[in-house]
Amino acid sequence: MTRHQKCSGCQTQKPLTDFHKDRSRKSGRQRYCKECKRFLDKHGYHPKYKQDYIIYYLPKEKYVGMTFNLKRRITAHEKQHKRDVTGYRVLMTTKNGKIAHIIETFLHLIGFNGFRY
Image 1 (cartoon, rainbow, N blue to C red):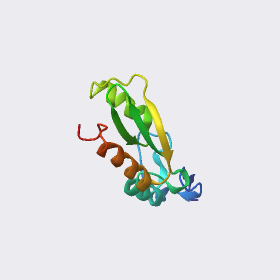
Image 2: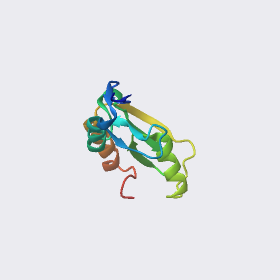
Image 3: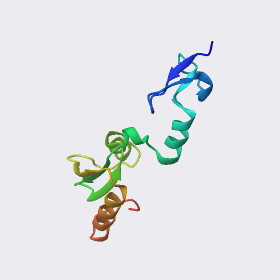
Image 4: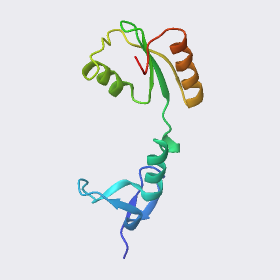
């Protein structure tokens, strides 16, 4: 009798041999099947749960950036880069990475600080 586990990505029951081992989890296996894990590693998201690109603004720093995880990014600005994040704003969200990148680049070209400042 083969044991099965439900993949958190594709939501299908698969044999345990379709999951990588993970000793830190109670089941002893990762949450995502090998196929979904490969996709996640390559693209950074699962198509079912595609994240929004978030373009944000730090007014005190005149900084514009783009991220998938705003809370983690703001914390990094504050703790690692010692930037003043007071009053940060989300300028837009989109699922289209090309549009997000073009808008962020445009804002950098017209004078906002960004990635390389």
